[in-house]
Length: 169
Image (cartoon, rainbow, N blue to C red; front, top):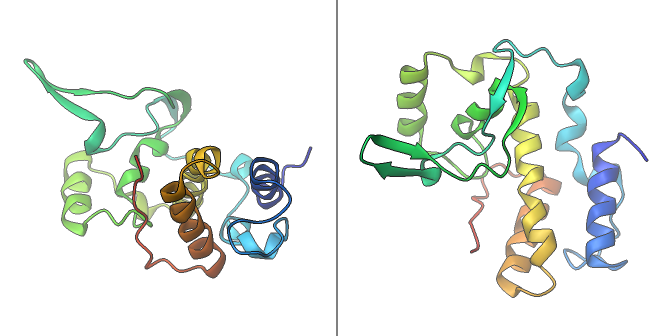
């Protein structure tokens, strides 16, 4: 077992998709191919200014539903005890391209801008890599998921921050 995130992701892709790389025809497992997270400080060494607590870990407007008493946060599948910054990841500039106006409104309401923290890219990268998981699981059976997985991995390989990732249901 390794703690190198690039190796772990490459192994997961290889195991799920087989020895051939359906994403590009190139072999996986080369750390330079999945390099964005390598530039980030190791998670264990990161200091989180907001501390630790209960984290939803998928807090965004699509996981909010109206109720008589206001809004209810749903989809607690990723809930954990961890750094509170994880719940602010949805406000970061990323491949999902949250509009700047939404981000600015959230920052004003929450009174904390994650972009002012030097390690914000680490959480962005972790979240983006985590989002590959569901596509890896279904890519072999769902052509649209395979296509989106290809787009996502290729954008990570190229470091192309302009590619907007789409959700495939």
